Length: 474
Ligand SMILES: NC(=O)c1ccc[n+]([C@@H]2O[C@H](COP(=O)([O-])OP(=O)(O)OC[C@H]3O[C@@H](n4cnc5c(N)ncnc54)[C@H](O)[C@@H]3O)[C@@H](O)[C@H]2O)c1
Image (cartoon, rainbow, N blue to C red):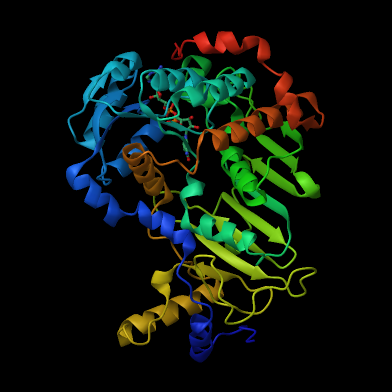
């Protein structure tokens, strides 16, 4: 087995030849991939509306503009400028509404995407389901314990409608490949997951403090803070990789740097979740430095490291605009329990693994980067060798060729058309929201919070939640 301290071309070729697999992980993506979706789209498109066309809504529309199995027929925002701008982004001359109930009553809307602030997710999602629409709601799915119970009760009454949450990592080929590495024992026993999302300066207060709706994230009345906005994505990955929900959570939050205009959410949080079998996930979010030590520090801000007795994977979904997902696999020099994959081992993991010595990050590559000695031209081969060599040096990293946000949106429309079931379904969303809510309780009450405590929280407010109105900030 080559140690790959300094890869020669021959070494790279050997690596490239080792263990090339077409991914089971990719088959699902392929099912909803551009080719197949296009075939549907020629005869059929889902007509959708979006509620909340702020920062995320507009970003989603910029992706949706290139997705052809959905057609935007309506937009809604209480802010007229926002809805006008969003209409130009999507370019389909959608009907514009300022009251979301009117959009929900529009018969020309089959599916609804919701990107309003967190505290309004539940009432808008509830109303969308009750209006008979397929519903995609951004993460974190719900805000309060009573909404966890209320949505769990409501969702089965709308079992024929798709209800999907915007946890796009579930739709990433790299994350799917990593999940299969976990399932196939390639990482050994996965005991720890470390995740971080570091920013500098973090969320900046816009003028007018709490009376400016753009500042909703900074106030507990409307927001779950860093836990809901950032940790939720990575907690979901930990739930998925461990195949379980945590048993309890501990945490420490501080409002130590950004004490401006009445902000009352923490500006730094440190969380530890314990999963069954003593497995742990740690999460760190700070607002004073954006360094991310994963992935050869090639990306700032956020990443997650999945650590087992036989290896680790560092993975990052990218920013959805300029950078796409990246993953590096590190084999453990002396695995304690399960043997690592050996050279030429084929797995069903869905990506191609080039193997190298310990402590070197090996890119989890997608099949399109495989070297095909018969088909690839000399130049293509040279490029691929160079790319692989650079990967090994941590200079260049592999990229997923489809933004997982595109895949989650295509998949939402595809499931809406075919009656399919989303990967990021209501239970995934509610598990994630439960973890967010309880982690915030742990930090507020300075104690270990057990996950079964959710059963006793908010029960007396379910009726209230079912009647709650979505009220935009003044
Ligand atoms: N999946 C992701 O990676 C991701 C990334 C960013 C944001 N988000 C989520 O998207 C959601 C929106 O975040 P954002 O950054 O776009 O916030 P934002 O403040 O920029 O936009 C929210 C929009 O909703 C509108 N709105 C509020 N109440 C409304 C109502 N009742 N009817 C119609 N419009 C209403 C506001 O006017 C605003 O334009 C949040 O839940 C956030 O967590 C998800």
